[in-house]
Image (tube, rainbow, N blue to C red):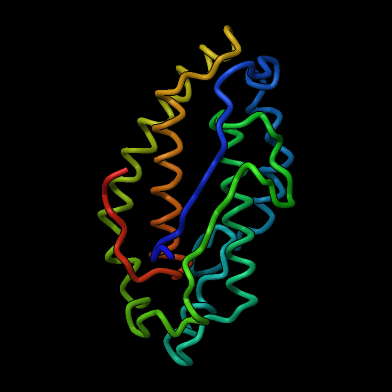
Length: 194
């Protein structure tokens, strides 16, 4: 079993729905509002919907990752992955709030938190700063590729493989970083490589 989050998206490159590709930004609005409703605004700042602080406290003080927090964070990351895959044109399947067999996010086995370092969650966010900087660069490139792919797919109905591979690798990178620094399900430092 892997020590990091694995992300798989089944990409269809041929015979894409040109109308939904063209209007993708508008079509995603309702589900984006749904995801935004989970976001927590507090004095500590924007928490992006994940339940982070209780998981951190449970790991540090009890050396356990509560199963209900793990289940929620897993489901929420999968939902975000479905929405991002739809927005970035990897799939034509409208992002359901239920699981999708074509998009899979697999968490590492953490044995209730026993497989995780007790004190590392206190500094993971700091250690992840270089990863976040590199991830922003990857994301900007992926957005540029998606824009070009959007034009090509809207015109021809075929999604370019070069864009799909890079965008999927960028999504995988961000899920690994989230798993390490914020969701706290991995102690293995993610690679900078895609």
